[in-house]
Amino acid sequence: MANFLLERTVPLPLDEAWRRVTRWQRHGDAVPLTVVRVVPPEPTREGTLVVARSGAGPLVFDDPMEVTVWRPPRDGVTGLCRLEKRGRVVLGWAELEVRPGPGGRSRVVWREEIRIRFLPSLFDGVVRRSSRYVFGRALNRLLRQP
Image (cartoon, rainbow, N blue to C red; front, side, top):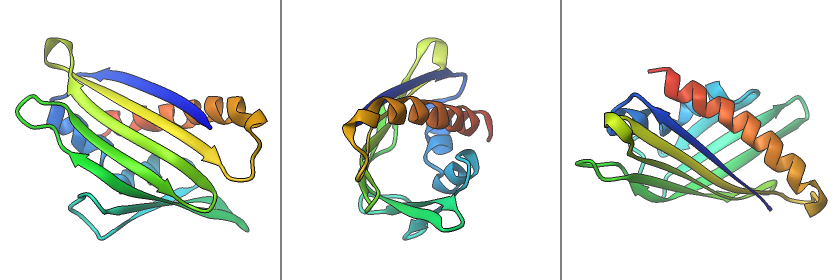
């Protein structure tokens, strides 16, 4: 399994940073060759299924993720969302945390453990580096765009 951590401090209030990183369909816009659907549609809650369909042509797969923790930030308290990956190809989990940062800003933390089924652990370094790159760019884009 490959673990990675992304952290960003942004000049946004907690609730706006949370809104930007948990608008699931926008993740599809931020990650190349990916479309995201949510079942059931908004509002997100524990049990919501977020399905990222990635790839092109015959190399397409679904990455279903179930929201197992849903605690939006409230009254200056840290928000946390945990997604458990339930797919046939991608396994693991992801956590999105939004907490108070310095000077009224927000600190966004994305932690993920990812495993590609049938891919030997020898490739964990490649998976880690490529995931940090792809999801780091996605996180930047999500936080920049209202």
